[in-house]
Length: 623
Ligand code: ADP
Ligand code: MG
Ligand code: ZN
Image (cartoon, rainbow, N blue to C red; front, side, top):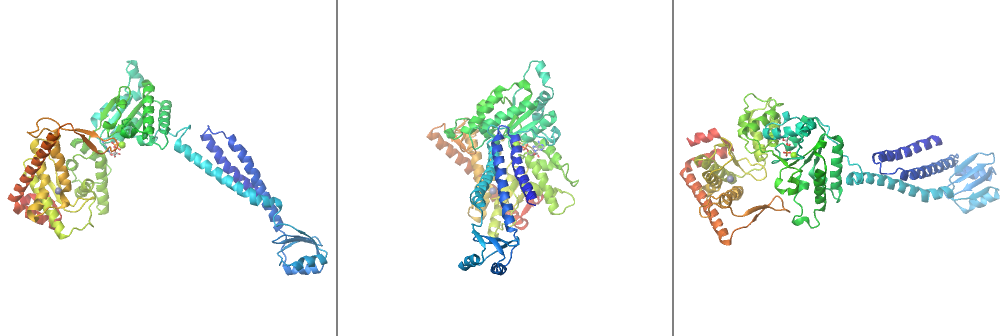
């Protein structure tokens, strides 16, 4: 029995260290000999442990007898010898039988044994060997085992984390291949990418003509327009391995790791050529070097960027590796990245236009069970400025909403709700406005809607709602553009200003006071007027000049700072011109609302009653 215990213990020890050796195989730089010594030492110690346990257990296997019986045996002269420890007594009867008992200690026992000629030895209950073992060796062994186990783990984690001097696990993706069929619209981008695909498929072709491929292709466009999707599709179309790594993954806590990763990435890619390296969110590493915060701050990022530049310079374009990258902030990229021989081919992936949006919606609605009445072009028209990711989101929301109300198929109303949700955030049904607030919001939104209908270039109002949504919106007025716009005329901007200020003016006219609800409107209006005056030359007094230079702040990349390049006097003039535009717009809104006061009241009443007013109801009122 003792043997099998020993075996199983040894087995588990072996297993324990086997894990370590397997680990070593993955990391050849680690010499296994370091572990070998440990292994034998541990096995020896374990054997010792087991030996002593067995030893102890044989001691304990003496048959226990009651103390009273022992005393009687002493008095009857039946005992030959005993070993006395502080806890128990082991002994032999004269007939050779071993026994064991737990005595009641007193001085008389020794005398009694002496008078009955019992030979006795006093010992500590543990042998010196087991004593040393249990008090010294065991704790040490346990500590060492725990330590080496922990060390093994942290070393492993550390190696994963640091990837220093080791193979970094950069593998090409093996997921299901995406093709261009899964990317709707974006035709010009696709067209340009075809070239790269041809090259990846038949690299010899271009070489025969002595040409060289552009090394780097940079996809530039707003978030959610499908840049990542396009890059994947290129690898799917060309049927080559795809190394996908995000810029932020390069940036680690420790200086030098990012650079090592870049090196490794290119090395792996060269082995798998033809293939694609795709660096998503290039701006995470590609920011301009030496910004104001660079003093001691961005060493790691700069090293990584330098390594990337070196690798891109170093590799032979005929090797069949195409480097792709994506960014939505090309303006912050280091100019060195865009130079010839690096990301010299830039492809714009813009927000989808109406036709593209229809295509994208078709793609994402393909799998949905939809009512026949649904017209995707109406939905596409309602969603100008939204990108592919938003549209995918809308299609999914519509399905979720339809499920929530147990509709058998997705209706147009479900889509409307989904659009509102994506555009304005989820409805906050539990944010209850009191009747006074509700009245105010109703007049505010009615003001926007009425002026939007009355100014010459206002886009038709599709829907007015006073259901609180998202974080701060208490209501919204949704205008639906008839067609897509790429330019705005001065008149349109002025109308826009009047519409923005109309909410506030309606509150002032009807309720006699202003409220905090117009902050968003005012922000937008201020931005429009500032643009008109400073950048669009729409002020007579200031003329056809631009004033101020916009700059991205390095340390606050989302904020813009304006660099002043005009005098104090001009600044005052700009302020007064802006003020004048705003005042004029306010004046217009006020006039329209005063003239239409009857309709304004009716519309506000209807809104308070129904909370949502759609175009038909508004038109009926306006008649
Ligand atoms: P980006 O990388 O430009 O931020 P993604 O490629 O990650 O955008 O796109 C996010 C999601 O949006 C995609 O997974 C896809 O579902 C959807 N999408 C975006 N653009 C398109 C498009 N042109 N066609 C189809 N789906 C798209
Ligand atoms: Mg992306
Ligand atoms: Zn408003």
